[in-house]
Length: 79
Image 1 (spheres, rainbow, N blue to C red):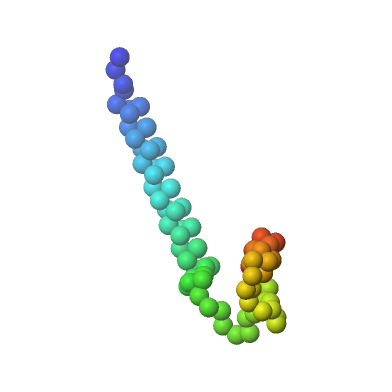
Image 2: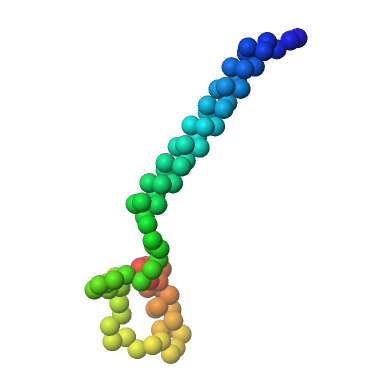
């Protein structure tokens, strides 16, 4: 069984076109991502940033009940 050269060239051309388009698309998406989300996402915010959950006037837990209450707060709020 012989594979025609013309058919082999068509498959090779399709493969090269596919790889080229994939790399170009990846490059465009990477550039757009860098433009939109530039900088460090986890840096300390500027201005009047506040925490969502802030415990006001709560004494530090010294006993087991305080630790359990704090753990329950973590499970509920993720804080």
